[in-house]
Length: 388
Image (cartoon, rainbow, N blue to C red):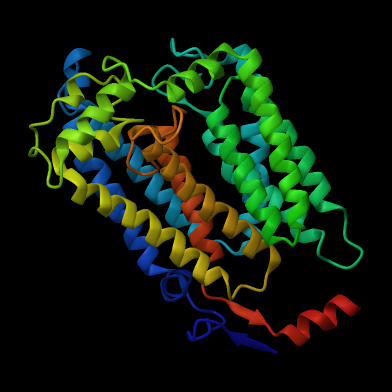
């Protein structure tokens, strides 16, 4: 016996996949994602032209590439959003396996592009950051283990997921990529909480992470330099943080005007990590609030729909994906306004970068798939199966 949540009409057996997908997908969230991508292209027109000129490339070289990457990311998102939870789980496991093996091989085949961290795999015509693809795969795999632990006689899935977490965080810290490691730890803690873990155990894990951070500060020059720069009372106006902070202050409420900003000529990462500074300077506080509202809308709508989800995997994985997506945006903007230490993290679907936008498409595609309206088993049915 089944009932539908959200008050929607149940999908009819034999329906073509596209009409069924359109009736069940969260069309509001889909619209918000497309709006984010549109904002990214708009900001790319302003932020990437100076970089193209410095590199002797056509003015709209980076914008054109972003449009191509974005088109691929949107297409991937739509295809994945048509999957069932079981297919999402299988896809996530395969994605994790491929990304994990690539991250393991990065010390031997990767490059740092002069940034001091071996995070990229150069393909000649483009570069790939495997950790971007590791995140959604990691979330799907750990959610599967955590969900399996809730079944009668199931395996110790939470313990397995912890071992996977420790391995992944260690690998990322060795690159070093403490930003992605922190984001993956956060996503795991959220999923662990949703799966029913006691708060005291979560507090212990947070304390363990704090201890690891202290160790990294004492033994990693890269980590210590960023923390010291964040804690410094004064900001060097010649650093990226200095330029970004000044640009945000100059923008005011409505900005200095389209194309009139100056920060894009000074910031080497104006089109990637600090694109929010370009938005604040040229379009002002209004544009920044619009971007924040779009991220909040996607996360809140997804979590709201997941409240009625009775499939443990879909509920746990969906929560992890939504929170990771939102917190990555929060970290990026927090760094730009100096609320957080510099972490080298992109703004999903807005910053330039093939790995970033395609990985964001995968993340949102999995989230849209898990928040689609589906027939839900009655509680009596679930309890009956658990007792057998």
